[in-house]
Amino acid sequence: MKMSSQVLPDIAALNTAVLEEINRQIQESVAQRGKFSIALSGGHTPEQLYALWANRDHSATPWDHIHLFWSDERYVPSDGPLSNYRMTRESLISKVPIPEENVHRVRTELPTPEEAAADYEATLKSYFGSAAPQFDIQLLGLGEEGHTASLFPGSPALEEKKRWVMAVQAPANPPRRLTFTPMVLNQGRNTFFLVAGAGKREIIQKLRSEPEGKPSAYPARRLSPSGVVTWYLDRAAAG
Ligand code: 6PG
Image 1: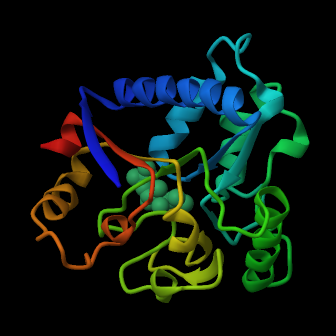
Image 2: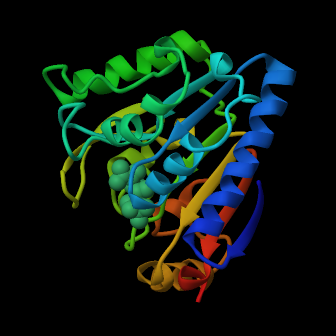
C-alpha cells in the first residue's frame, strides 16, 4: 500500500484538490479500461465536493463511461433526508449528464437491510464479475471515533471474509446501515480519505500515534487497500 497525505488550507481547497485528482483518474481509467468506477461516501465533507463537481465545466467529462456506487448507505427511503443517494442526487447526479443506468444505488426499498445488502452485492457482481471489485476511486470519510464507510469500531463487518456488502447496526443516526466490507475496500486502485474540521483533529492525532505492526482499533486504519491511499486533510483537522 502506498500512503500519503496532503494538507490543504480549508475544506474548499481540499475538495478542489480531490476533484482535480478525480478528473485525472477519470481520463486515465477511461483511456486504459474504457470506464471509470467510483465508490462514493456520505457525510458533510463529500457533499461540498459533489456540489463543486456539479458546477464544473463538463464538456471534457465522459459521463457515459462513469459509474457511481456507494460504499455505504443508510437503510432509509432513497428520497429521505438521511439517504446518501438522495444527497448525491441533489448535489451532483441531477445536475450532470450521467446516464441513469450508470447510477448504481442501494435499493433500500427492499423489505430488510439484509436483502438490500445481498441485492447490492449482486449489483456489484453484475458490473465487476465474481472477483472482488476494484474501484478506480473509493472516497471515504473518517468519523470522530475512527469509523469509515459504515464500519464502526468493533463491528463484525470488519472481520467478514465472504460478503462484500453487509447490513450493520451502527452507533450513529440512523443505526441501520449497509456497508462495503474490507473484502471490497481493500481492493481499491485509489482510496481517498476526506477529513475536514477541528472536530477530526483528535482522531487524526490518535491515528498518527498508533504503533505500526499491530491491528488498529480504528476501522479507517484497519483497511489496507492494495492501491494508492491518500489522506486529504484540511488544516483544522491536521492540527
Ligand atoms: C456516512 C458515511 C460516513 C462519513 C463519516 C464522515 O454515510 O455517514 O459514509 O462514513 O464518511 O461519518 O462524515 P463527515 O464528512 O460528515 O464528517
